Amino acid sequence: MTTMDRRVVVTGVGAVSAVGNTIDDTFAALIAGKSGVTHLQDIAEAEYNGSTSRVQIGARVKDFDPTEYVPKKELKKMDEFILYSIAAAQQAWDMAKLPETLDDETGNRAGSIVGVGIGGIKTILSNYAVLTEKGPRRLSPFSIPAVISNMSPGQLAMRFNLRGPNWAPASACSSGAHGIGEAFMHIKTGRSDLMLTGGAECAIHPMNVIGFGNMYALAMGYEDNPEKASRPFDKDRSGFVMGDGSGMLILEELESAKKRGAPILAEIVGYGSTCDAHHMTSPAPGAEGAQRAMKEAIAMGGFNLEDVTYINAHGTSTPPGDKGETAAIRSVFGDHADKLAVSSTKSMTGHLLGGAGGLEATISVKAIADGIVPPTINYETPDPECDLDYVPNEARKLDIDVAMSNSFGFGGTNAVLAFRKYQD
Image 1: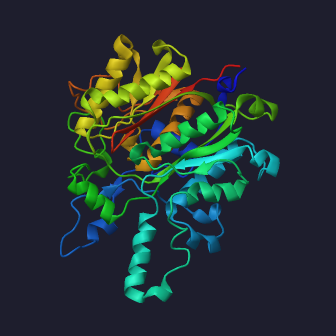
Image 2 (image 1 turned 90 degrees about the horizontal axis):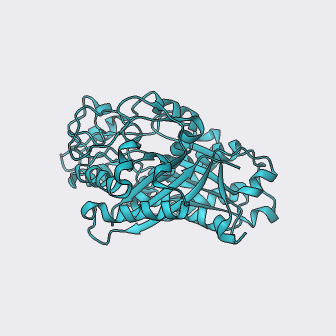
């Protein structure tokens, strides 16, 4: 067996999202078709030069108690995106039945890669307000380590003694998927045996909401019924809804996982990474870059098109994005496209930006393990240019052989992951 033949399995997953603060609660809510999108009173009431945000909805994490995972005295050292990643990581770690912390020898072969798109913007802006209003001496010495993106995997490394590769890719809405894909490659190529990986984000702040709103990227006009705002692939979709949270996975080399009797939820088999090199925000014609990323994941996975059962779509609910992704899937899969179950869980969780790929990878793994596909909610009016089976409004029991998770981001960056039902 060459190093490139090493098999990589998922032995634990964890999540914090707008619909649940654990992976089990999150997945149960998704299967029930529950939306986590709400009206954001603080953003609605915030005034800037007498004006307010046109968008006042989002999918925030609710009732999250970080002291379940981090001592209260340590909270000031971390932005919320780091706390979400710690919570999701601890869930995954416990599910994988790993020891509380790794010994040095094992830790040398273990690492953490966590995708983060924006990082600690809320803490950055609040610290800047302290600086300008109260002066330099009142600025916290933790103002920098609390906000930099790599402190998510950095904190995880210290927590679990992960002494191998440790970094935070920032590739917009593909960050989390890129993190998982790169972690997968570290194990597949023999550089590591265990990786804690995923994505995290906590970016719902007036600056981001107003900024995306001024780009006309966000759904508007849903303040009275926010749960209806995210409607991927529906003809009346008008933009995405921002979400916060984290999704984390434990990846392990197969023989190492079997040796310690770890639970195996699925096998990760493929990863594609491409760029459109076309436009800052719009996909290339026919989503050509997305097509190549899917083809790369399929080629690496060594499976047939007909083996793919489910695609967790990027499905942001933007008019050009959903149309382009549909065209890309049709181009790649041909006649088999009509047999695919394709759903966008962003219809319920909102769009976690850099954390999206992490959360959606955990959902894809759970879909394989539990044999059920979450729906795309708010699918009411079919769009002739979006003509796949989007698992409308109700979950579906399905025996999944291969599930793919798509993530596409500003700058034309694309990442696709392929997971397969584990067979010894």
